Length: 73
Image (cartoon, rainbow, N blue to C red):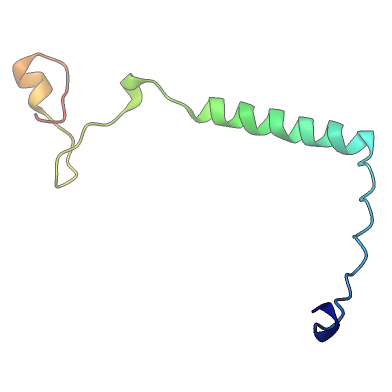
C-alpha cells in the first residue's frame, strides 16, 4: 500500500571534503614530535620519586634501617 505512505525526500549526500595540504601533514608531524619529546622529558626514574607518609612528611626510616625507602616505612 505504497500510495498511503507519504513520499520521503532524501537530501543529497554532503560534498566530499578537500584533501588537506601537504603543509598540514608536516605541521601535524612536527607538533606530534614536539609533544612526544616533551612527554619523554617529563618522565623521571625511580630515584626521583619522593616517598611520603600519610601526613606528607618525608620518610626518615631509611636512615635508621639502612635499607631502601618503601611506602610501608
